[in-house]
Length: 139
Image 1 (cartoon, rainbow, N blue to C red):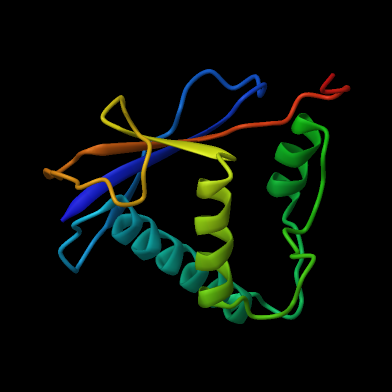
Image 2: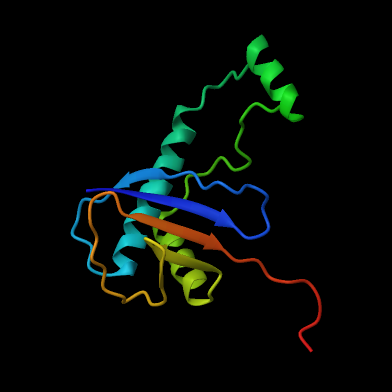
C-alpha cells in the first residue's frame, strides 16, 4: 500500500511540505506498527547509501556552479561511516514520541498514542512535526 509522509520542523522557513511516498507491506494496526515500519525502511535506505558511496567523489562544473548559487559547496559526504542499528533507531523514535519531541498527524488528525488504531487508505498522508525546545528558564 502506498502512503505519503511529510516533515516539518517548527521555526524553519520552508512553508511548503514535500510529500514523500513510502509503502507498507505488513498490515498496520497501530501507530507504533506504522512508525516501526517507516523507521526500519529509513535506516535500511541510509545504510544502503553508505555502501553505494563511491570512494572518489568529485563535482562536475555544473554541480559546482549550482552549489555556489546556494552558497554551500560540499561533496555529499557523510560524517559517520558506521552502519546504523535498526533496533537502536526504533528505540530512539519510540522514546522521542513518548517524550513528545514530535507530533504525528494522519490526514490532519493528531495521533496522541502509540496504541492508537489506524484506518489507513491508499495515498493517506502522515505529517511529522519536530518540536523544538524554547531557550530560557522554566520558572
